[in-house]
Structure formats: C-alpha cells, structure tokens
Image (tube, rainbow, N blue to C red; front, side, top):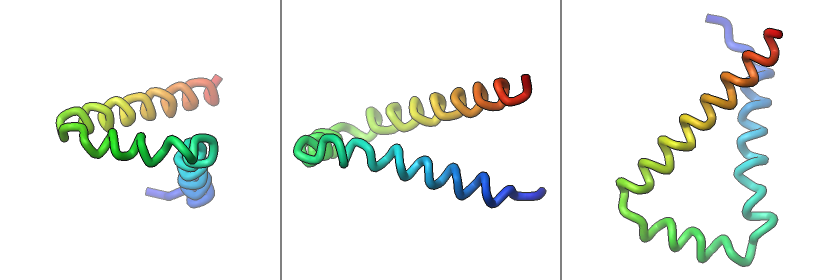
Length: 69
C-alpha cells in the first residue's frame, strides 16, 4: 500500500484549519461551549462523534465521486 504523504499532510492541515475556526471566530463563547460539552453524557458525545465520522465519510465519498467525473 502506497501512502500519498502530500495528500495525508494536506488532509491533516485542513482538519486543523477547520478545528481552529470556531476558536478564532468565537473565542469568547468557546469556554462556555466546552463546559457545556463536558457536562454531556458519554452516550451523547459518542453519538456526536459518530455523526461527525459519517458526515466526514460522506464528504470524502462526494469528493471522490466528483473527481472521477
């Protein structure tokens, strides 16, 4: 299996950009949001995580299908 390191680094970089946007745009509200998230039950957090994974896979699939056209 060959790994495209350029693509992998680009994906990690893009993930960091998306992770940083809420902290940059909503710096005053993020501590409260993090406290709210920390008080949620683990089942809810797992559901949110699973939903994010599924959404991410759908976006990747869409990108793959668009690039093959």
